[in-house]
Image (cartoon, rainbow, N blue to C red; front, side, top):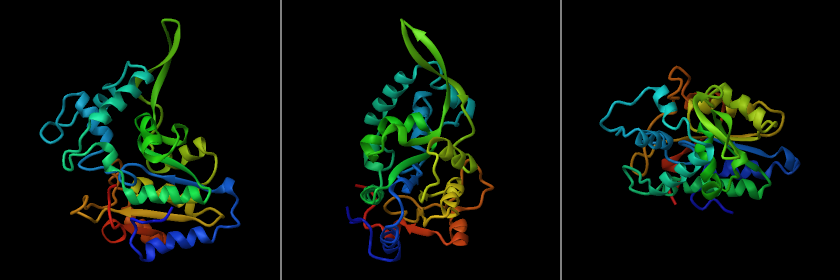
Length: 274
């Protein structure tokens, strides 16, 4: 797999050079962790999962007041995990982006899909590590990213064991199973789920900074990429702050401090979407 949607330049070359210099790294150590919202698919005008929940509540984010976090958590409480999976799949099939008018599959960044394929060619196991709900991403991760459901890490809702009609089910609650998968908890969850320090880490906001730092400070060669949304014409232009922690350092500042590779959507990608 070649990086056809990546323009020739220092960023594309940095990726290729890194892959050329890890011949002596064991395949078992080749772990890549990639954020989802804003790194693999479009996260504006708001997170895709937020649009899913708001539609369930009958709220138009362009005109209505956004409900409280607790109200958002309660939107899908009381249904089984199987019912939630089916609802996610049905909604995503019918969803159309308010600006681009395309389904969610049309909101995935083509250059990133090429990069995931290239990493796999070099024997990397790719994990999606999302700040959003793990149960929202898992039903579609294989279809759009080629990532199996058990290779998705993210924020989780508490579920409760139950028996219904002689069958074991898990019912969703309105409580988080832990802190949102942003910042330091992202690293903790990577350890708990994967059990290995990643070599490649890719993100776009301050909520991903600790994940990239975790890869950067390991003993093996690492590659840390930050996707910079600087293309208002083809997508959106905005900084790398974290909505969940507005006081955190913008990841573009962090990237400069650690000398991470910043990917300019405007300059480094010949196309954005597939």
